[in-house]
Length: 291
Image (cartoon, rainbow, N blue to C red; front, side, top):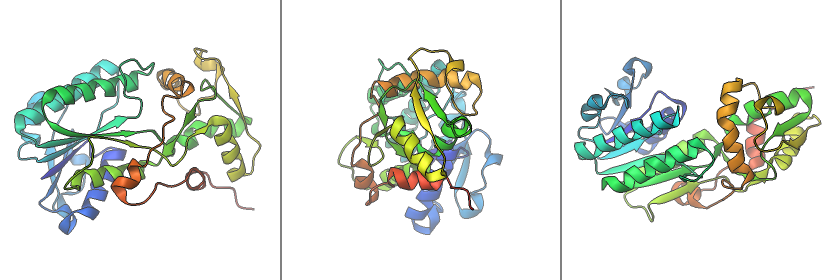
């Protein structure tokens, strides 16, 4: 039995879809999901078991993880301390339930010394997994290409993409591609290593990305690097609330330091073909207006 947590979320839902493709009979009888609110998922009719599991309530996880051989632990979002506690609850519950293997969705910059709380949270989960004694596969991703339209929303109005990312480079992978690779890892009878870094084909700085987006939409667009530590009001963070932009600001410090610039062939090793190029992603997420 494979169980996917957070299956009502954007990534978890796609992982379930890809597992349904890879498993016999669409996963019926072999695939389960764990969610806070079972009413939010509609997969039971396909023979996929729906279980209630809340990372904030450890007592719900014992039943959710019972009989599970492979747990696809989709990381949660929120304040750093809360996420660390939630992941710890899930890992301890998985060990107690006798789960044989955990596939954890981590981040490329998973490092306790990262300026990004998001990265530090993942580093803590990886450390908890290592200490748990569970067999595990860590699947680190870069940034989602799906977020590019939001990142460029304000820039496409003003003509300037203003971010505190310096000349740092980053590779992008679509959320759907990431889900495909995670599903492939979950069903693989044997894997060559414990940690996979799922990146795009190439890494690009935001000056280059701005030029590619500009060409795709037929507009003039420039990139302006903002000083690290500058207030949120001094850079364009898309149409996201200021509070969200403040949370993301340390992530740009990681990008400026080239902490998420690595590229690997791990995606192709799992899926059997390379991920989409950056130009394909830009074409997918930015459509030039029709004449």
